[in-house]
Image (cartoon, rainbow, N blue to C red):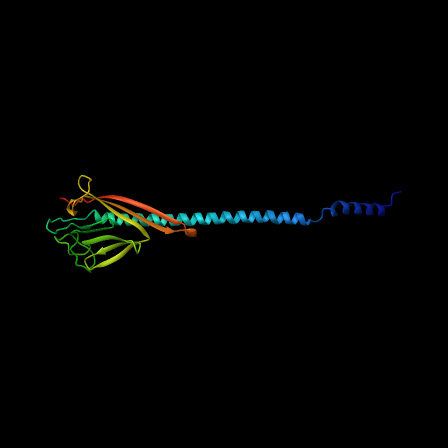
Length: 215
């Protein structure tokens, strides 16, 4: 007859041998696990760093592009009106022109300097916003708006790495004098720094027909 007590002892011994042999991790197992976990953590960290860097670069690039376009559009709207002289006696003209500066007058307002509003042309160029220049200041890296009505200078855009005005006459040639200018090509470059000092640069150009010149 089989003794039940001996049977349970044998079963317990078998279970101990089967399960006890594999009940823990060896030092090698632990080291391998730690190495794998480290590799995974490095990969995850690199992924998040790359995503964050890409997001920052894209944001800076979008901002630089928007600022560059806004600056060119601002200049385009005003330069297009250079020489506006509805009554024919205001003497509106382009007064100075160079690669980094354009200075012009126009008759578009009858409101005195320092007053609110603008109004209508009145036959002179002595009123508000009628004596205007755009100039690049390389040392300050700024695009400046100069209002000669009171020697007032405003910084329109920062981080300007280049501004170039190209002038064409009626035959798309090089104008001999300011009176020969019919078209102005504006090229503006703005740059800024993104993550890790990476430079983001955008250039925007516009061809402006000065429709009030030569009339």
